[in-house]
Amino acid sequence: MHTPLLRKLVLLVLGMFAFAFALVPLYDVFCDITGLNGKVELKAAEASEEQDLARKVDVSFTTHTQGKAPFKVQAATYQVTVTPGTLTEVSFTAENLSGDARIMQAIPSVSPGKAAKYLHKLACFCFDQQSMKAHQKMAFTLRFYVDTELPTGIGELTLAYTLYDITDRNAANQNFPTHPTTKQLGDFSRAAVGRDYAHSIQVAVYQQIRGLSHG
Image (cartoon, rainbow, N blue to C red; front, side, top):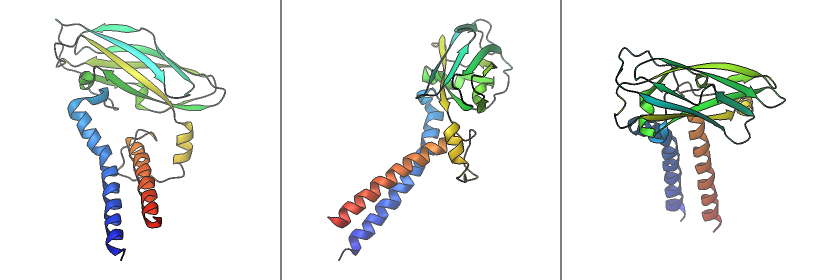
């Protein structure tokens, strides 16, 4: 007598799984179109062939750590004024504040969000994981330019970096194979977010099934 109910529950579980795994690529597409959350490309861009010498844009830099990540990253200058299309270099210093070797991953974002697709980086410490010894200091160079197509109403940009300690994540991921089609940023990948979210849905659905079966 419970066969129809079990059949519905199985379909519900399959639907939830499909929805969970679809969220990450759908979010990527939506961000690419809208510039939501100031999401930027995490790969090197090509140099611009055009310049807008009649225009100036102020670009500021800021960093903050996620959780208890023991890192300090600071730009040599808080703000630079650039000409759209002109390649600009800014020096950064990074330090591991802990007494242990750690791995840092910096994730960039741009505000206002709609300007994210107009800031192009040719070299950035955010492109790779940064392995740092205890109390080690490192120097990096950011090379970027602002696109000449930046809307004229935008005269100021802020490039922010969120610093993550991915040491433990890397150690854990070595024990789990990654699907070959997964887009990777080292071991810190968007797919990891999708897997965590999917797992939370799986647990919730499983708990609901248990509740129904024992109710």
